[in-house]
Length: 303
Image 1 (cartoon, rainbow, N blue to C red):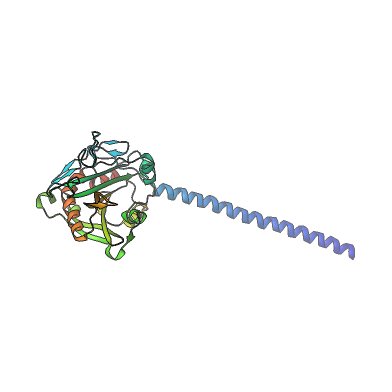
Image 2 (image 1 turned 180 degrees about the horizontal axis):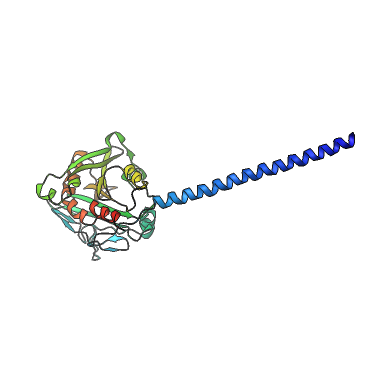
């Protein structure tokens, strides 16, 4: 009986081991199938989310990712001339900013050969004076163009101001209505760009306040919130895609760390008014360098 017990015990152990291997094999098979399946899903998801680039309009000229042929005069605003900010002249207007390659990399500009930027400071010629005379008003314009990206987080003033030591005043920040008042200028613009929202970001440092303003052209349509841009980038139905950020900041002449220079306009009412005034003149020029919504629709409907 004892011998029979041992034999039964060994048989039971062998059967249990075989069942264990069967269960392991089944579990491994399920995991493998799941892994293959999820890899397939992720691959298809990535293909579905991938965006084709939207080419520039024919007027765009870019060198080292910088737009080089934007107008130096926009209505009553002229770009800060060579020698106006600095006594040393180098043949390039002082108002033009050229970014280093490492900065462009951090901004994601170098991710595509079709990305570009334009950053420049303009002076309002209707206000007498200049930096050297200790008075005047200046407006900084930034345009950044991104296309063909799978997943991009637009850079917005909220992050830049915070990095510069400002506290963001959220109760005073948000969408701000903008409307082109001049019938002559409005006639040059697509209907969607005659009345839309800008996004105003207000920051404070000590007793001073400053504001920066932006709007995105998302496939040719004005969009005030970066979250909307991010959301549209994730849509399966959007295959051809670009977004361009148009950003404005207003400056006046003042003293900073004991030296005369440009400082942020601290009067929010004056800043709002100057921003609206500059954009009214600048929008027809800016939109020439961005694909229209019709351009994107034609791409989407083509083969």
